[in-house]
Image (cartoon, rainbow, N blue to C red; front, side, top):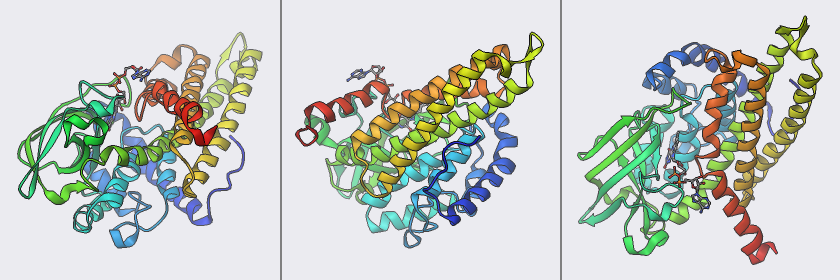
Length: 387
Ligand SMILES: Cc1cc2nc3c(=O)[nH]c(=O)nc-3n(C[C@H](O)[C@H](O)[C@H](O)COP(=O)(O)OP(=O)(O)OC[C@H]3O[C@@H](n4cnc5c(N)ncnc54)[C@H](O)[C@@H]3O)c2cc1C
């Protein structure tokens, strides 16, 4: 399917994409259904990906990474999306968690953690959400208190992506519970610490190969230098880094929507009803033409957001608008494409069925559509600089 030509990538990105595509087709696609049954991907896959330079691609060599740029990580995300592989949580590890440590960790923490993350030997997660609060991050109740040279963490998190496989977790804690968002700090917790435990690998309606866990912290002790940045400034760091997380959702949604569309074009060309191809009904043609136009708009929008982000110019409002728009685009595309498959669209072995259920979460995690609208509205209506 030819959408608009993309101008972001250099020849080394194109060569890398070919390498990632081969890896996805050989090492991931044939096994993904089994991982969906197992509700996790094997740890060995992470090490394979690390050896191929597919993890933390943007991380400079001096911090133990391959020394590429963010586009390489986004290529990995796009290629996984292209084959509908929702299991490997590489993007969360590389594009969401690693930056917190690289931007806010001490030199010794970075040296201990980041090279292992790039090699796929340490799998990372980020834990903000709790059973009692998700959107209202300032209301978290997990606490960290200083005791000599250590932090002591107590509390509970839920819905944590990579939670079952994780070797280390960036945990949002209250270090000054009376100060709301000004009392939040981020701590890196290795999973082998006494008092750390995992609950159920949660059963979801989609993204079955992705491990999603409850985490418990019962007097977990970590050294003082596991604090990221300054005490009580965690909320600010979260707000800064969430723009990149939301851009990643835009990138993934656009790629998934394109894949769902391509599968549907192939299906309607093949399937017949009333002695003609489904592709020959005017309804099918108009639906697919309309979606094509939306995908073109989405592709240009997504690449422009990427370009702005690489130039350091994508702000919270811009990233939120993109996340809102692309996650809703994917919802529409998956729904309309499923309809064109008829009953087969409801059968799990058809990629469109999985794409449909896998898509639903995109409007919820990384900030719900309603929270995205709130951020955009605040920017448009309340920020004097935007008036
Ligand atoms: C599969 C999966 C993976 C996840 N991965 C992670 C992870 O790795 N790390 C992590 O920390 N979290 C993760 N999450 C949690 C996710 O980010 C939260 O579920 C999400 O932010 C919503 O929070 P909530 O579930 O508590 O919903 P709530 O905050 O309870 O929201 C319920 C409803 O109320 C609406 N609402 C809330 N506040 C407002 C408002 N101010 N105005 C209007 N409407 C509002 C919401 O939009 C929603 O429709 C994951 C969740 C899932 C399901």
